[in-house]
Amino acid sequence: MTVRVENGHPVVRRSVGGLATGLRGPHERSGGLWIGWPGTIEGLDRTGFEDVDRQFATARAVPLSLDTEEVEVFYEHISNGVLWPICHDRIDRLPLRVDGWDVYERVNARYADVVAEHYRPGDRVWVHDYQLMRVPALLRERVPDARIGYFLHIPFPSPELFMTLPTRSWLVEGLMGADLIGFHTRRYHGHFRAVLRRLFSVEANRDDVVRWQERPVRLGVFPMGVDTADFAARAARPEVATRVLEYRDSRQRLLVGIDRLDYSKGIPRRLLAVERLLQMHPEWRERIRFIQVAVPSRDRVGAYRHFRHEVDALVGRINGAFATPTWTPVHYMHRSVPGDVLLALYRAADVMLVTPLRDGMNLVAKEFPASRIDDEGVLILSEFAGAAEELSDALLVNPYDVDGTAAMIHRALTMDVEERQRRMRALRATVIERDVHRWTDCFLAALG
Ligand code: GDG
Image 1 (cartoon, rainbow, N blue to C red):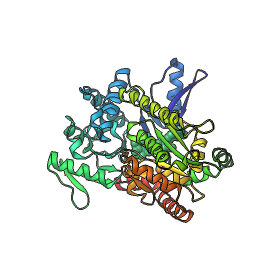
Image 2 (spheres, rainbow, N blue to C red):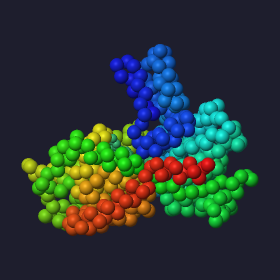
Image 3 (cartoon, helix red, strand yellow):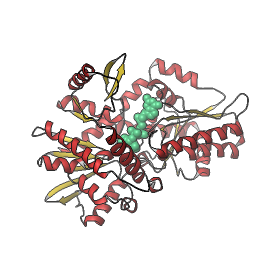
Image 4 (spheres, rainbow, N blue to C red):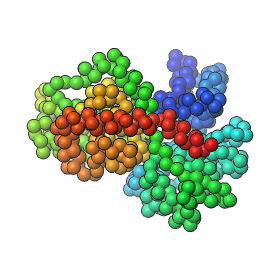
């Protein structure tokens, strides 16, 4: 949940992301609580803050505040500046000096305190993601009998990379406070098991259970899905259909990319692949258009500021080289777009490009088929996105292979309608069967 100040009054809003959607049902049915940081709230007086507290209480959410140092050290430096690059195979992006694990611990301990304060016997606690890797163990100290699940939304990296972290054992010990630890894919789960073996010489049994300090800790693979039914219903609305007509142009095929502007998403090589396509197949000049939405992200982390300029320059260079008075190959939108625009882009795309260098799951790859109620459109998907383990009917590419990606875009653009629809129907069947509600139910059932 986030707080916005509108006309001097605070408004608490539910987030619209996949996680919030998936957990809405269980949150309502169980009478449970959301505990989390709602972001820094500015511009309110005391009455304003009391109003915020009231709104959170009504929504059954418990806000936890972070001070400026905590935001900088726990969130920006350690979580986004160290754990994020390591888990996305980018040790080259690490700062030379890493300080601040004590602040990471302090914030995790505060989360554990707040959970312990609200805990009632019989509760199930579900901890999410890499910012809170120490919470399971810290909560276990406070409430030894608590039933604790943990889910990692990003990749668990290869042991070779994870072992570079000076805090590697301490982080794993944090996770092992849980009763159940979930990953998106078999690969991340395998990496974690290998790390347990190397660091602690412990092995999971055939049921995926590890004995840890006299307790069983279960590991599991739970690939997250999207709310397929909701995407299909919203994609069918007339407002979206009208936009789809505006975006389509009978003379041009549409390529679409939608990502947070992050170095893990593979945007520069994707742009190079589009450039390569225009060089290798000049017949596509003036006949394709590539819309890339890049949502601004983590501007306060140094690596991201530099990366933003790199992408700006690449877009400029490609457009400079190929544009004509009536055509521009790359339409670059460095901002977030409203939900209806996102849906219309999914529906209008001839080819959807999801080519991260590494991605935990990547929900865009699932939202695209969920929105294609017409069974049309081709998905090009990186083999390094978690989603590739399930979506084998996409055209899989190695995103580091720029020429290979360019050739795959050509293949997608020239694919016959039968193959296109067969692949899309198969993708849709997968995302319908494995939707976000199934993900939530499976995890909670395993935890129960
Ligand atoms: C983590 C992991 C894992 C994007 N642009 C706009 C917009 N979006 C929405 C998409 C989608 C979401 O943002 C992005 O989904 P991702 O899966 O890429 O990931 P994150 O939530 O950032 O991150 C990731 C995920 O957790 C779930 O476990 O898949 O690997 O990194 O839902 O639709 N939405 C709107 N405008 C935009 O411009 N409205």
